[in-house]
Length: 283
Image: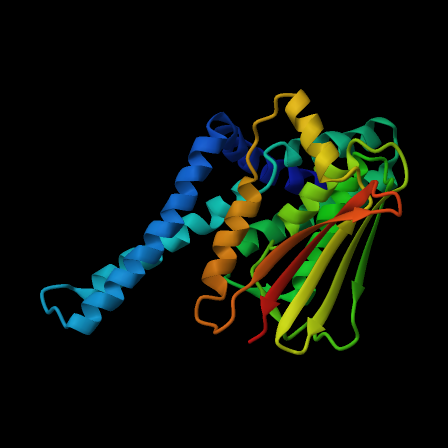
């Protein structure tokens, strides 16, 4: 357990410093980040135009190298920035309570899961895609850590249709994290009991992967009201970055992705949750 603690402390100090910087000018920085993704797309289009025009004085290899360098520099920043900057600190504080209360087994368990999650986040910065199996495992780790702060009151379930091949289907890493975070903080955080999130995976005519995240929270209308009353002006940076990454991910495919939000209502038209439907074309 001491070894795990030391590993987590070392990793957290380094990441903590990065998050301290991100928090200072988070919104302005991330808006610039999104613009940089768009600039990179334009750069690639310009490269293709120059290739077709056969302009000899352009050193294509240099332009390609610049494009790839910019993409690589954005990868880690975008993945870390899409997560709530308080996540790591709050998670460590929650785990620290187990240590203070002499609950060593629980502390060791969550420290181990937290360490695995941080490794997954860092590894995600070096790859364009991961298997759906890996993504679901990472999301399970993420939800386990987030659930500590809710005294493990959130009932999180993953349901996968038997026809889905988790090992062969590829998705961008950390794709689902912003949607789960929204379900927690906009749907369930203001609810006192009976908190549920269900992540369902299925194939749609073997042409699209259908991912549904449903919560039984307070609903979008009530959440927007609370946000307005508290004068919260936090933009959905994580969702915006995810859209940019999905756009790049499916760029060479004939079909695009889609994200749909649905309000879940009872017979009296009262909000009983929110459902997000994400459809990604299969290769």
